[in-house]
Image 1: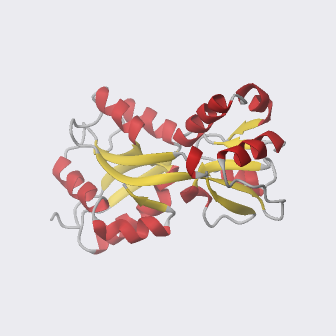
Image 2: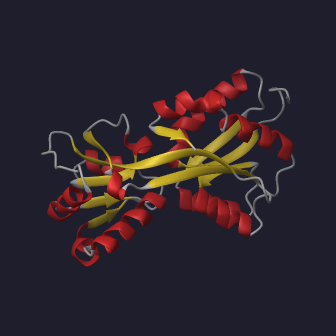
Length: 233
């Protein structure tokens, strides 16, 4: 194992895994692993910065974004490691009436009844719009949609009352003041995102990055992942 006194590896991740990675990377460094200086921003911006050639070592994004960066040659071939599975959840402002979201039909009715709906620029937002399309309500809800800017949590829009119903990764809604977390989308229309890590093609220390990724995917990290509202991938 490389000594923790070495210069930190540089990382980019999306906001969904920010708190989890902060916890896990602190634990990794505490046990003698190479420290990682991780910057967490909106996933779209993170992918753009990697594609633009930013000097990073480790990248953690939704698996489809990782695959796109791999295909474009920005990440080392074969270096993708799936880290966590994250469910999309639903929230309303604190004190607001709680709609039934126990089934796809109930959630569809809640979406149609809501005066405004918040969603993200990330994979959960894309999947949610596809769900509305499948339900045949995309045109009806379009005027009510409010997309959070990259890096802005949907939960903040819910807490401020800007939106009546918010959809985002559960990990990003957990523990936020001013909202009620209703739970994950029901099983018959659940949205799950896999977040993966990979080695940046430009990294001078690919072996050190592989060691970090192997640990992040190891059983030793499962409890922290649950605590942050995710599951091992």
